[in-house]
Image (tube, rainbow, N blue to C red; front, side):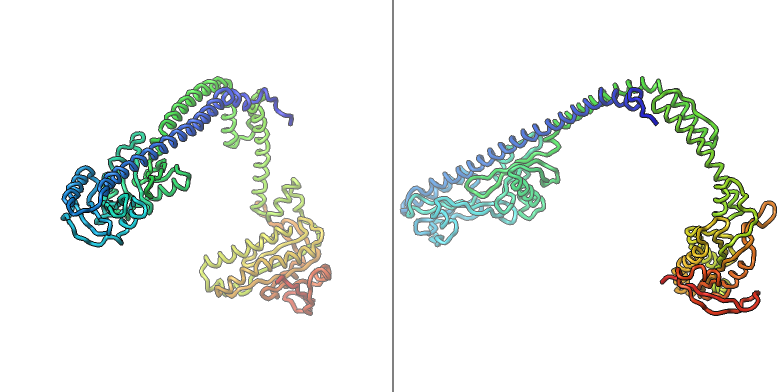
Length: 574
């Protein structure tokens, strides 16, 4: 078949007009816009979140520096006894000026507690308790300023101890308990977009500050706090900015920044859906443009489709006629494009279907009366002359079950039919594979021919191989039957010699079979064969000697035959 002219190709015209002119540029433009828009928005968002995180960290640092500066004023002078009242007034003034300080303790240069004022407990003056081993006092003397770990009073409110030492060891140390709830004011002022938020975690991952105070007051073991800690870990491992899940289960983009002076991390986040909403709107605009382009392309396709309406209708009508079995119908389309070639192929297919239907009907009629191989042979030859009676050397094979009569008498009908169906299915496959002809079923047995009506190049060897294959096919079935307690086996008898073969019957019903002494001999050998045994006559044994394992079993008297007949056994596969 010559190659179709590309200029006349319906597919080429449709594809070029629709996709090359409209669809492809739109899709490419939309994809590029979406990609570059996503990258630009991502970079802008990362920069904004990082800036907000750093700003929050500096503001929290300023909050802590304010407290540190106020505590520094409390340790400017030594502790003479005459100024204790003045120190107490200064301490009370500090509590009023710095609401975050919940408790203030002043320790002199010898490490003795001199004063303690508190918002939640009684004030103490001059207790003289030794606080020199207190971590806050020791840390402040070493580093001038000391920040303790975050703790939760009563398992909910976060607190932190801050200690500041004087310029000289004799002046002492100011130790303050800071209520970190007030950091929430700093965090609540951070907004990224409509719903973006910030929160603060300490080093171990406990929530220090969050716009939702209830999350902070739930303590460190709350599942929401653990999710926020996981978000911080993900962002840190990604270089400071990453996508994760916040306390409420939403996916967010988060940026982190460390608070100088303390092991705290500020995390600023914005929901992914909100952060990339501009991209979503851009995609919607692009989708609208693509839909308009598709509508325009559809109008172009409609113009082409109108020119295709007539041929398509002819093809549709022709398909219906052919589908209904009218294989004589032909489709007439004069175009040289795909439709014209399709019509030509439909017409060729209709002719082939007509021939195939005729052949199948003929074979179906023959198979009602003949074995499948015989029916196929008649069909190939074109007439049934091959079934006429003639004299030919054939190998006849009989096989039937052992112990079947007793089995069928004590078994339900469905079990008997199941055994026979399984048996004949296995034997039929073996006969077909070796080119034999299944002549007839005889209750629990069957009769097969080799070399009639289908010639075989080496009928004796083929027959012996077929007999072995039949026993091999039955062997696994027999094992199953034995396991079920059926007590049945299978024996085979085969003989070779001249016989009259052809159709036998009457008008409307006939069978192809063989008649002659060799048939009787094969049947008697089958009757004499034990379970899993193959018995053959001298003619078959001589023909396959040296090619098959043949064993002489002596002469046996066979029913209906004069004198004793030499019998041979053929060894089956393992």
